[in-house]
Length: 272
Image (cartoon, rainbow, N blue to C red; front, side):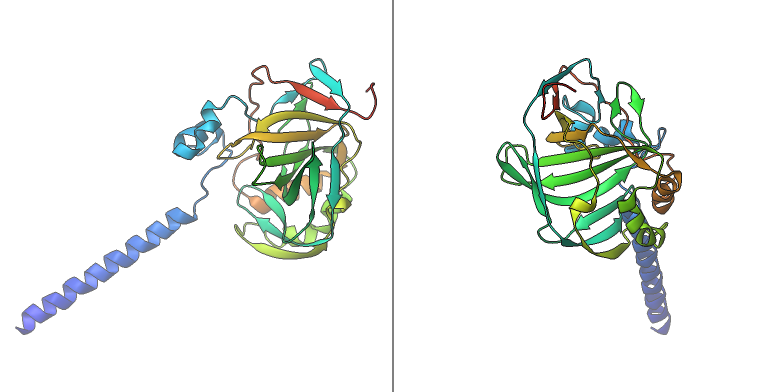
């Protein structure tokens, strides 16, 4: 009887040990990034559409982003967008593939053709995802707006940067970003930030209908890529990549086919 009891306890011990170790392995898998940008990776851009059914558009979509914005095929029209941003509490988050500035509350909105798109967050890609006449820039910032009730629910403003003087707005976030190097899902309070502090540039911008540039690559996104190119320092770009440290040389999705989509240059005047 005593021997049977001993065996029962031993079996139970090994069962608990096996369950515990399995749980640890499962947790490690859950903590891995869902996708990455490494060219030859099994989770890289060429595999995104095969990883999950809800990500199929990444491989099969007809209106994918980013694209090359060529001045030869743009249509110049007058139809300015309106930005109405407000001071709002924000946090900086290391999302594992990029650094994101997220507003909590009413940070204002972007008005497109009479539809308001409330601002949600901004993040950075390096090098730029969109190119202009084949030229790729040092970095690209995306300001993401969302209106769940609109036909096209997502509107993104893209700002291109070349190497030069440091970007003043990004300089304000340097301390927060530096403190989260290699810390995925780390969140830091950035205080009250007015999105108007982000210097976007001229009133001229490229407009086309595309997609998100990360899974699930949702289509129907209204893109507004500012024509004026801002400047950013090499140290700022380096910090944004080091903070994420996802072992990829960049976090920019490869170029996607235009598929005969119209690209417009929105301008206040008739010339560019």
